[in-house]
Length: 315
Image 1 (cartoon, rainbow, N blue to C red):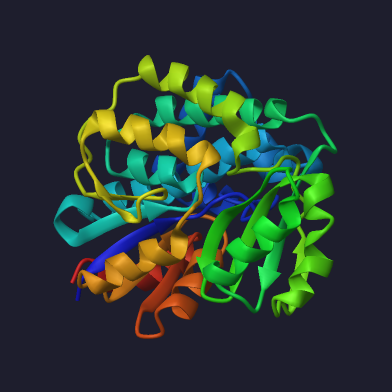
Image 2: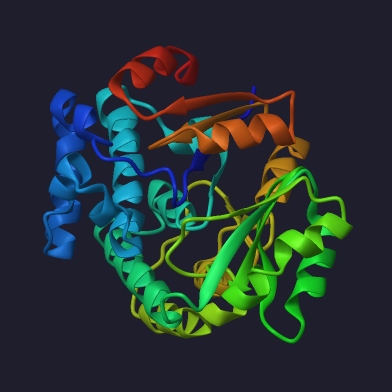
């Protein structure tokens, strides 16, 4: 049995996430306190009490999701003696989750990860005026068809593949006027459904270049350590460990495609049999099973999940 840990991205947030961890485990509560202090913000109160609209703001959702993932990690490691270095072959995270994965693998400090994600959220939101960008999920088709749809819908505007999530779900991102053409264009290519996503900005496309520039500047001033476990980079679908390459790939990730399907396929091809989604929600566990049916996929986000999984993790 070989294990990979996966860390969720935006969309998995919900009011109340992490509260039961904080109430059950003092070490989890410390994580939320550290993140609040790093941001000079009572983010944990927003996480636990809402309102949902405030939590969903990109600049709040990104560090909040990382905080829940790291609270789970701290419980596993300090309460139950789990060793990521000894037990896990790869870590990977979806979009912002790549920062969670890097923090879990000790490449980033918790405080640096929180501050970087706060800035990332602010920069992504500021990169494109509200209403100018959009994202749409294509259902029932894979990457090859999605690229053709994007090219046909673009008509000189930005329309790119943002997320290759699983064999029948690909997300496009770009200018709203181009994305508005996607449902009709998609019919010509066999798209079953084209679903506009309720997002505040067109992530992972060239319109995000101002945010990529902001992250390049921020990452240049942060110490990145060699991760204790290889991190599968979103933009490569391959492992990286060199600190300078980590910075480079995180900058590329802002405008680049999240190659999640290929990330999971790479891990499976290299011996991974069991994946654990660490943090809020169950999105990545579901995607993993649709990408590779042979995988055992488990979500760990609450105290009961920790207790159910720890004996297997420590075996």
